[in-house]
Image 1 (cartoon, helix red, strand yellow):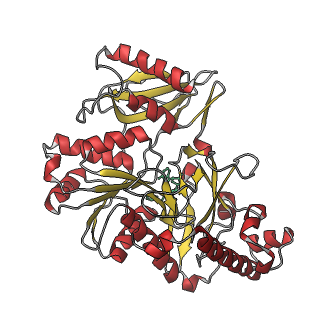
Image 2 (cartoon, protein in one colour; image 1 turned 90 degrees about the vertical axis):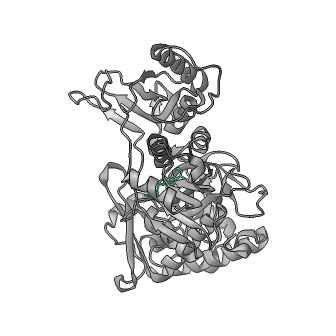
Length: 448
Ligand code: DLL
């Protein structure tokens, strides 16, 4: 563990710390007098001393719209002179969300990412092959600074140029791989294509995040690459990667660094808290951040929280894997579906590759959902989860359609297209859902 004391302190001790920090945040926001301070006053809060940790669910919320309304950096709580870095996410619809960091924020972020790497068993002797994109996106530089903080050797690969990545995996013998889960699959395929035996590698753990991925994809990645695949979660508004990470010991739920990021799960419609273990929208409060402290920021991400003990010894609350963003939920003939659920069903079949795209065909009046996928072929076969392999692609498509209907109640048309049809993302996040409007060419070649 990177910070044994912080990660294993008793719940009571942590709650006392969180309470103190929350009060200090409330005082700070009130004294700044910005949007968040104004909302606190409207809610009748005049001082940090007025609030306790239990009052958190009653305090006002913030959301992405607030950041957009004050674009580019209008919600900063410090002067621009104190900002030493700016990052952000391209976001939905190309509308960026920008965030600023002070020097202390960068230190905090590096420590959080060092904790994440520690969850994967990384030590100062580790070599970290970092294939998250470097740039405005927080993945590359966030993990980079975490690895440096830990004292490991970081290889700043960024995304893309896959043949060179394969070369570095062989030549530098990293034990930790960090990238998006979809790029991990791409790297696994590339090893296979170039004839590199995975036994030549020294990988032990992968820290994969920035996009939703299913347990079925974990199984797939662990079959492709010789490593334990762990989930890491974060968002620019809160800090970037390093908000929460799975541990190698349990690989079950992501430990939220709740001494710095207070987390709640609420009903996405009513905003009311949901019971522990029930999926809800994650809401974060960042009491220790300087440049952009946020009170009850609605992440839009759907996951469940659990405070049960973990075998790794960390006492931090755990969040489940993220099902998806509430905005990305598809409603198909009255059935609510997240792309990660479709992924789970497709991959459980054992005959299709992990490249898939959901196409919402809006050309006709009644929109229909097309699921474009590929048979295995570009990657080594893993053991099929259900029954023997067989059947023509047509039969396979029919069987997948049936499985989607049985398991999710989803009516969709599955198209099994030639290997290479579904676009691969070498840089950035996988695009799982696309729209097909009247007059547009097919978003995936071969789709009719
Ligand atoms: O994606 C930060 C990050 C970088 C996390 C690298 C992990 C690894 P943004 O670009 O601001 O920041 O996007 C944040 O990505 O609200 C989620 O919807 C999604 N997301 C991030 N991690 C996960 C994950 C980074 N592990 C948005 N599972 C978040 C599911 C994730 N979704």
